[in-house]
Length: 433
Ligand code: DLL
Image 1: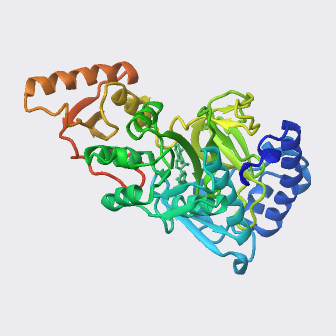
Image 2: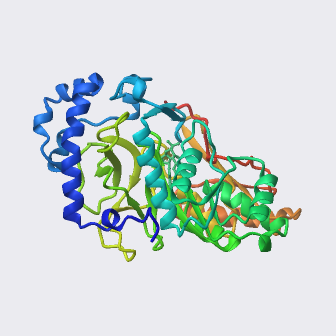
Image 3: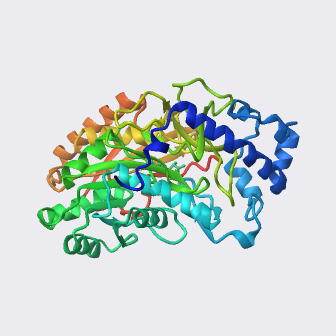
């Protein structure tokens, strides 16, 4: 049995999970109140004291933290231990461009890597695997998180970092990488390149652990087919630790949240009200085991739904759906809510690669939406009539998905800049904020 498949924790009864959460929440709130003046003020403003928090039933009494609070308290204002106890900083721009810094003690790093190890094991990883990590290293959490998780599992770890596609493929073939860890957009790009070079037979990949950005079921299918692997989703955010907050198991139906470390809630993003089980809303996390940066009721802005149904894999930790968008990068175009993932679904359904860019502009008071879509080399044609028929077909499909008109421009293969990290899908030139 793999060391980081921890059935006594991952398959514990719901009562046991709740007991752990109660046991860990109460002292965490006390510690944050005493050591983090910024959060103490928020609690005082709400008239809450640590004595009011006796179990997770009282969680809703605590104030929320937002990215705006992180900016206000930047850089050290939310750290709950002496700085001399911190050993690491990680940082992200997030998907919306604001820098966030997070702090870790050695114990925090150990727990974070343990969460990533659980994710690798859930994707079939063992100490006999060669784990190829091409998430970025450095400030971004992707590389260090999966690297640490892979070490804990005892797999042979290739700290490739992002970029240099030639070298990635060469190493993959030479060293027999079996598990690929990167963003799904980079996985799709690698898959294209591997096929183009005729290297598909030389790779030994069996699984991929892809996250850090939204990707659809269609994109999963595409990557799985092209690489002949099983593709697993992994979710996380720097503020809460990094990758491994939740991860998919062999069932590939939602990501198990490591509930012994993080308590999830779903709230109405407009009112902040906690929503009943099964509702779609904004995901909020409370950290209950972290020392340096234990955020309480942190609003992720990710819109999703929690599923408490038993999972065929035996894990009892709640599953979160793939984020259905972010409450703050949801585009409102002509008054209609548009999520980039909806556009991606249409493109993949129609056989286009997931290489596209969404441009939003405003002329007078009217919003204009344009989607630039790369063709595959098989589709590429000089015949203008053919291209325009294809464009018209996509316009119709987008209209029926989104309810609004989007201009579609088909562009030649490989003309949209590739990202080695998170893909830049949306360019919104409206200056709305
Ligand atoms: O992206 C951590 C990570 C690294 C996760 C590697 C998975 C793999 P941040 O840069 O702080 O951290 O960005 C966090 O990215 O709030 C989501 O909006 C988005 N995100 C992360 N994972 C997923 C996913 C890392 N699997 C923000 N699906 C989060 C959709 C994701 N969105």
